[in-house]
View 1 (cartoon, helix red, strand yellow):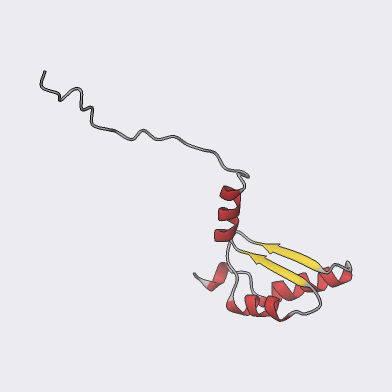
View 2: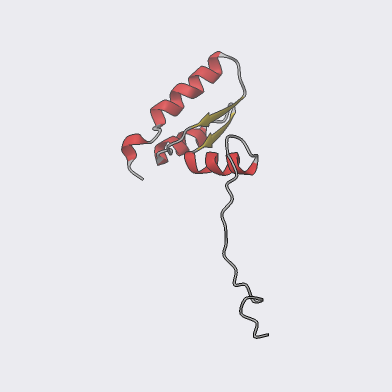
Length: 88
């Protein structure tokens, strides 16, 4: 994926700082985009808190799994009518 729209390590560092200011020991950073390798490394290296990164693909999977913000659509699947072709 192109790096231009990705969440970078600076954003993760800022998020970690905000969590520390609030005295939090856990955090979830959610994006509809993706994380750079530097961002993933920054998140994995922090020891003082538990940090979870959720990118756009995982977010979509979670939405479908837990039925949040999704709608079911039905499609017709044609099936051969064997009675129509029966030679009686």
